[in-house]
Image (cartoon, rainbow, N blue to C red; front, side, top):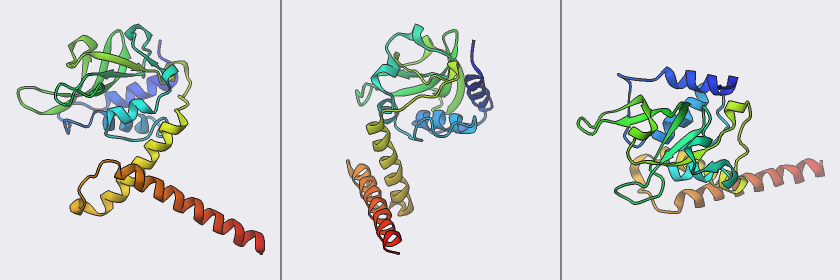
Length: 198
C-alpha cells in the first residue's frame, strides 16, 4: 500500500498522458518534473541524465531486485543498446509490476507518458532506486553525488543562457558548476569579513 507521499507522486504522474508528447530522451526529466509537481522538488536534482540520477542515490538505496520496489520508487532500465551505458531509461514504479513514464513508439517515434508492465520495457529492468516515499520518508542523497548533480545543473543553466553558441565539452558542466560554487563561497567570505569589521 502506498503512503501519502507516494500517492501524491503517482497522482501527479497520472495527470500526464497522450496526446502530451515528450522528447525521446526526457525520461529522467519527466520523473523529476512529476516529483516537483507532487510537491517534492528537492528529492533529487532535475536532470535529463539517467546515470546522473542513479548517481544521486547511495548504494544502500539501490537494489537489483525488482521485488524490493515500492510505489514511487524509480525503476531503471538498461543497458543502452546504442551507447552501451549501463543505465538507459527510468520510470516511476506504481506497484504490481507496473511503471509509469515516457515511452517511445518504435513505429512512429512519438514519445508519450504511458503505464506499462515492467517486463514490456526495452531495455530490461536493471535497478530500483528506493525513494522511501511509500513509507512516508524522503531519500538522503549521496552528498558528493548530489553536489556534483547540483554543479552540473548549475552549469547547464549557465550554458543554456548562452544559447547554442557553445558546444558541449565533456567535463565542462562540472568545472563550471565548481567555479560558480567557488565564487559563491568567496562572495560569502567577503561578506562575512565586511560584516565582522563593521
